Length: 483
Image (cartoon, rainbow, N blue to C red; front, side, top):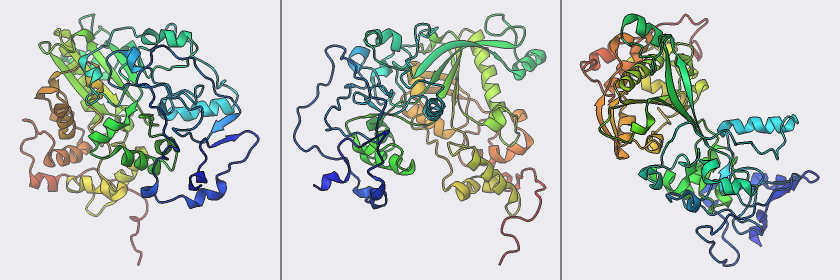
């Protein structure tokens, strides 16, 4: 049969070789790669569970290369994504111990899952180890909110991801290995800018939100991405099949189950997650009459951590934290959502290549060519897109933001388009913009970022006139002097 080009339960044992090696170069074009159809009609699986099933455990010496929906023994736990009852929704199962019953593609811990493989290879971690979650429950309450049962509002995280020990205790007691994808805790944040703000009178210590030492007290939640593929595809205005094939192609075939398991609709992608920081009482967040200040910030290691002055990232972040603290001190709540989307989700290597291009181009670093330099290196200006960005806001129950500390039109449009109202948009104060970052702010405002009062006069003349710092690179510009 032509279907035998890929076995129904492709696998390799510790004693056998890979049976697909000789056929690796004969893969058909992506447009012809479609999920395998079942050989015979099978009874439809139940949409929900009447009771907790018995767990089945994978054998250590059996390593599946991929699985197929109609293979013998494959019985994923059914998931009703968007159902408000976690017992009916069912847990996300994506651990290595329940191969035949997994209902998600990928692995826990995002990109860090590779390190667990290293730990197993180094014999530092037992692959069958099950975490002790007894003392890990959230230290403050989040939800449930009406948005949790609306896939159009939450499809990039598991809203029950922090409630594993509460909602699925009967599963855990039965031996299931279910991992939280959200952890909720508290922290003291120690920022030099907050100490400076106290000295300069911008902030005042109240001993509750902001201590005399300059430390602020906040609640926080770490979130791993959990994607519900049908809704992800809808948001990107494509088909689920095209989404699966595109991810499969661009990860060099990393997740064959994206192709072979169309019955599994959940994917834990190998990307960075996000962290939510909350100043004030989280219980006030859904109340539209209580002031809410918010910034959604995308990671910039160079600026956020090391203070690089080529962009406005850290100054804008610390300004947002100050505004969140003020709002909390006035009885409201402040939120900062910190996404791991380094270099506009293109990565730090690409970002630094763009920096070099900007500084070495004819005429030097200019606001006029700010975006074209990124396209020249990466082929695209930005891969953050923001279509998935509002999900953590809906997870928190946000329906109205009084002060949005951002000038980004993409973020504003995504949030408002998801049904959340925004009252005020707050730009970064001009005095906080580093000299070398004026290229960035000028280019962004000219091309559509919210200017506010502070930047409303930026026009084409200023765009052409704004130049960045020149670097004394050794040698000639790449390609200079060549025929």
